[in-house]
Length: 280
Image 1 (spheres, one colour):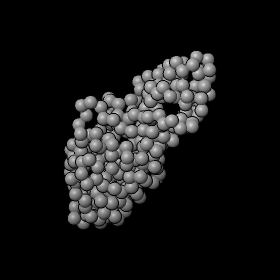
Image 2 (cartoon, one colour):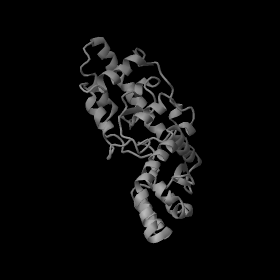
Image 3 (cartoon, rainbow, N blue to C red):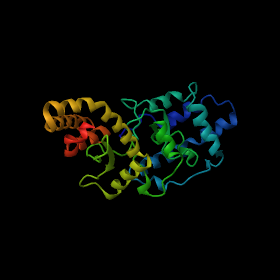
Image 4 (cartoon, one colour):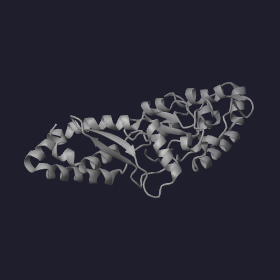
């Protein structure tokens, strides 16, 4: 759930670089003839992505009439992805563009691949479009698979075209278990559109982020357990609360929608944890 800057290179640049070593003259001629349609479809993609209308883009089996879906998929898988492929330079620029190497879809796990927002199997003209290629972790890539949205509400957040970083959407609640645990959920901020709220919730559920964040929070709770008990023994519940408030403030300043921000915000405002849960 992080935004990314738009790529600073075009689909034509990526496509021409990727097909430069094609030896089959007929294939190369047909691939080059696809470029106008690929550019047109990429421009349409950008317009529709800006308005959550990517579900309106029609699937294709051929591009420019005589280039098959399989031939265009092969340009991506055989000429852009391989380490010695002619298009690998652009693959790596897209894959390694996040500051901390973390997947922008879940904001937690390390990037391992590029995910096609619209699957290359159904949208071959977008197989190499930079704006359709999202750096992703293995889990998010596999969870989404080749699914395609059928309506605006089913379009998960697009890192290049959506930005929710200015408001807090992600929250957590403390569960009174032994030891304490947390559950995460979405609350749309005041003024958010109904559609955006639906898409954020869909994104959260599609990528199973409650499960991921709850697991990470359980580990973090174990990590801070000793310090929290020490604070409780020396200063009581108020000392525990103050420490958690400080951590929440710092995390929220860095990222309003990280699981740590939601976690510490919830813990800082939970009386049961300050007085009882901290002891487990």
